[in-house]
Image (cartoon, rainbow, N blue to C red; front, side, top):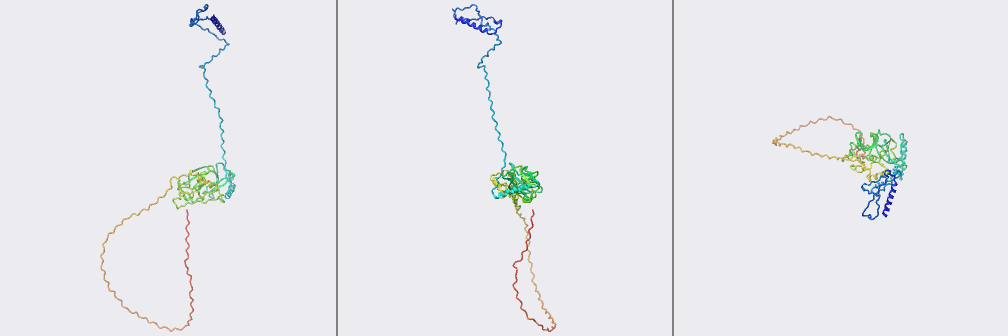
Length: 446
């Protein structure tokens, strides 16, 4: 009975469920309920009503078509683990780091030299200030800017008529008035006057002639600082006659220098350095004009080299390495520091080959010339000497005596008494003869 009641309740609930949907009229016919009896589980003695029940084959069972209501939204099915597609994990966007702040490049500053303390250097510094005032008062040089520029530690002044180059460094006020060093030079009547800036430099350069120069720095067009000319681009082929004229005004316009001075400008004055070329016959400059070095023209082993060339192959050795340059205390300190640390050695022009040594000329040995052996001649037979004949003795002939004429008798005359004759005194005899004047030696010419 309880099973029947449960079955009826299920049917009622099923019908209630179906009434919730909007079904078509054709399909609204109730479907017979299929009841299946299971002999293994159902009690055969149970009073089970079978009236009105239709046995339905499971293969022929039809599921009624159910149309959803227009206002009904079916619930979405709960997704299973297999249906869930894992969403890709979002890659975190890196937080942009702040761009590093560019460190500003420090602006180059001018390195000033403090005012000197020694009395000699104080006088030199004051001379330099007066020199610059005088130079800027000359016509054409009023616009000379003596304010020091970063990266350019020197200013060069060339006095053509005095054959002197003076280098100025920065003073305590940041101006080019401190005399640094002076050098002997050779200019020419074609050397231009004015204010220039260096343009380029070369280890070797072909010059007029043609000839060649070492450590050249171009000033203006064809005007350069360079060494004394060489006949060929070899360090042992110096024009020694031109070197011994260093300090004369004989160039074609360039400024000739000794090798150590030309190389100093080459090494220490960057391109763009100010060069002032002027003429002042009243003064060579605040430091004066150096005395040039001369070479021995008679020494064929050394005369082809500039005595100041720093090349280790220089046959003059280190005797003249410092040259004839006049240096201030600052310049001497810089010179010693640079030479001890080999700061200027990297730019030395190497010789293309060693200095040729002339081979001694061998004295040829005299070739003996064979002489013909004289054929012996027959010794002549001596002839008999004839006996000497007796010489006749001359006879003496007496000479006749001449007869003297008779003499007159002389008249007696008065004879004066003889006077005493004075004895002669001593006579000065010269001990030496006067020297003859020596002849004047002839003058020598180059």
